[in-house]
Amino acid sequence: MRFGIVLFTSDRGITPATAAKAAEDRGFASFFVPEHTHIPVKREAAHPLTGDASLPDDRYMRTLDPWVSLGMAAAVTERIELSTAVALPTEHDPITLAKTIASLDHLSGGRVSLGAGFGWNTDELADHGIPGKRRRTALREYLEAMRALWNQEEASYDGEFVKFGPSWAWPKPAHEVPVLIGTAGTDQGFRWIAKSADGWITTPYETHTLLERLQLLRKVWQEEGREGAPRVVALAGKPDPQQLSDWDAAGVTDVLFGLPDKPEADVLAYLDRLAVKIGLRS
Image 1 (spheres, rainbow, N blue to C red):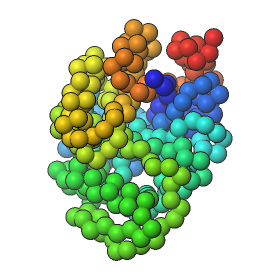
Image 2: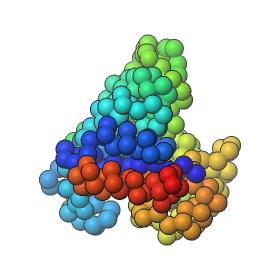
Image 3: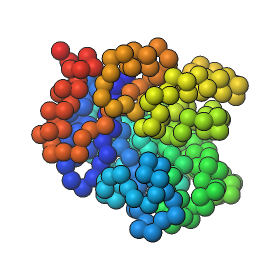
């Protein structure tokens, strides 16, 4: 089981480059950042944690662009995985996004994975032309189209949300870009993952039911004819040795710890303490 960091980026506090370099230096295996292009002031979509239009954190309104953030992080690191928890691909042009991700993976030496979400904020999606009730179909098409551009010499796609004729697109990614889906651990969500992705990113609200949900994920994965085991990225709070041991035994492959929204010196001190607690440093 690997340990990683997720930085809820904003225009204050520690920068992604500094945080990623500090995490790599302390032995963490991965570095994740989130995405929101904007937050509509008036919304019908309720936040899944608050249940209404209020936001649990003002950083939702202040997030940095994830691919610029990861590009800065790639420039100052050598080994750490670069990923998103989660990005919203359907809020971009898929051809351009495929180019961005392929370029970052090429330049970083094959260190990129794509953590993607359907988007709880359907008002945000609507501003990008994606109907809330069609967001799962749209994401499937985006991923299929981007994979075609990544893997085929002459790629084309003909869908409801994505259409383009035979095209050339380089660079190709340095490796097959893993796709991880952040969604609730339901039968519906797991079947979507088993058909279209490589793994699951848990929500922050499933810590206490994770072992039960992992049993369902394995069942669905096998029923959909997938070989091997899915990658499972669990979002954790404070490190609990027994919980981490149980997760490891149950098939969790990665555990992410969030960084505090504090000044740089405090974040670095937190990373030092965390690395000791989970055994990355003595």
